[in-house]
Image 1 (cartoon, helix red, strand yellow):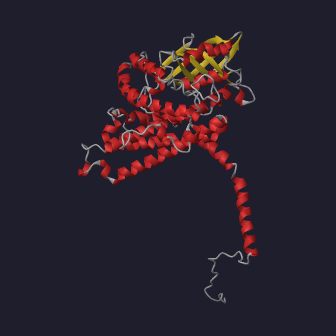
Image 2 (cartoon, one colour; image 1 turned 90 degrees about the horizontal axis):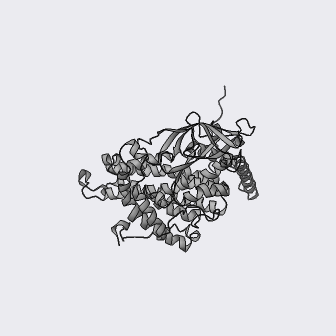
Image 3 (cartoon, one colour; image 1 turned 60 degrees about the horizontal axis):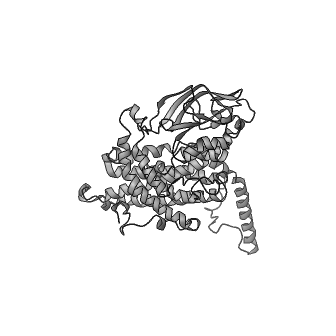
Length: 470
């Protein structure tokens, strides 16, 4: 057995053997076999290839956002030969994917989250996954043939443009980019930022949210989604935005402006006023995909922490780190948190499979908030174990922390999901109050029926003597 697969004191325990018991009845034999292939591909091919990828990107800004590391194409060929391609499109809702459920893909995505190159190598990388779902679910046949087919084949990349710098974009009704009908065209004006994927030289299509009816009385019918080819005149990519100093090249997050950008009316997705519906349909699966990959990142951080704790060269105060109780406590808590988060993600994925993303809003919101927070905590513990090395380029931990921190913001910040979860949970408050009061009242009646009275058994009613005679 290859040392690249060792994961326990017994050598290697396969990914399929580690599927949570609660999820096993929902995983097909084909998916279990594929899961083992994904694990082997990521551990033996992708993680070692990450080092090559980082070096092939280049050094200068121009180089980094004009490059396409050849290692990616080599990995993509290997992945396709293994049948590891487009696993993310759930079989219950799409015919274009590999035929797996959300749960089955979720277990696979955990491993993809351990490597920089793995998601793209298997054509399961954001934002393309969400964009392909939009085209597959809402696109016309012409739009699918023009854009979805090359995306499914890994020939091009895409970007999703929603957020804007001048407004509070956590509320999508605030967006200001205008999309104005002009004959057989639409004209777009405005700016976007955090446009993930816009820096990649292979990015050929932007999925853009803007307003076609800014004065519509229903604020959720003001928005529309339009497909904009990247080379349409009038688009300027001003700069790429860094994440804690990391530029995420060549993929990146761009700040763009649109100045009288004209596209054919046939580039409208689903119809005017359907934009909010589309982005909600897109962001639901995207949120759980992030959570799935974050589980893998948390596992990777724990693996690095355990490696450090068992390094004989590192002996603070004369003992290896695993001899220090505080470190073992952190390991134990990390194990508990990862396993709990995984079960929450599995539950959300199963709920989507049995209904839809819309039918799993609560479960998706829960993992969107829970998993990044757990991941960050575990990465932070691993960084602490490595000391100065943990915040340097000598480990992947600092980069993982930067990526994980963004997960609390992308696809809706924590506050949005927490507020909505709290509001929905509070709707049950009056019902609970009524039920509790009814149970207390019945308890009192039963006490009388059974002759035990309703007096508190700890009630004493002691007095200190006769009342004062003033």
